[in-house]
Length: 335
Image 1 (cartoon, rainbow, N blue to C red):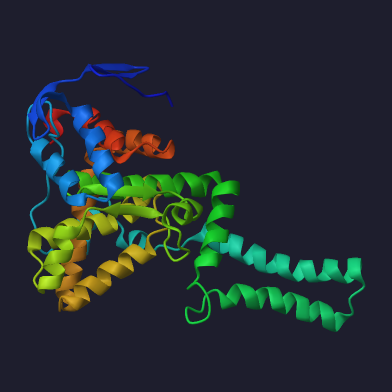
Image 2 (image 1 turned 180 degrees about the horizontal axis):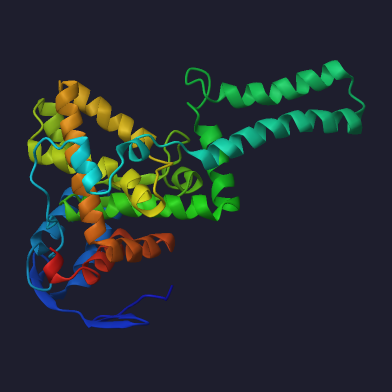
């Protein structure tokens, strides 16, 4: 991965030099896209989501502006059968039933370590068998206690430990998380939802948010969606957007690895949303199948942009910089 350098008039990459086109925006005339995106970053850092979104929308569709924001080509919405999904190379069983084998293995090894720790204590400190049993059970109890929300951190400590170990010792897990979040980010942007920020590890989320109950992930400027939910009426357009965003992580994993490990929480949240809106099972299935197909086709079409975005996110680039990467890696013919 090369280093990206920003200049007033040119964006440089080891293999790419692109003139910074001048555009007219609410910031004034004769400003570059990169200047506007830097301002977007500043507004997001201040927590002013409305101004940040306004700046992005102001450049939407303008020459030299943000031509990809909300510009994804989408499939017609109708009831798609499972056979139709299979014809498009989609096996829903592998996609919609994620099981994190990596973290599951780490958790089992930690439980085994607790038992081995008890045996080591027996040898080092001369504990009797009953003390060893109590020591091992105590470690397992503390781990289980964290999973009880009324008592501890609703699984936050356990998730933090597992995620940190996973990122440290499993390159596959580390890469999968990056690709997963890049999928969320890209689909959101292409469907017209502005990402607000992202974290790739639970430790990073803890450092930024100061809470153990917040896991790593991508956050979005979603006040328009929240306003619709609070009004009791969610438009089909908004629901379609967030359905695809929710599934984008598991779809990305499926396309890359043939199955998904992460993203069960995303699927559960979408399921709860559809139930809260009074969807029947048939209607919910229809919404999910369309969202899966739509998201798969968008991600297949923009594979290069997703790859470059994942590289940028892995190095901690800002939201504005990530948006710039997307714009530079999608041709006019693909939107």
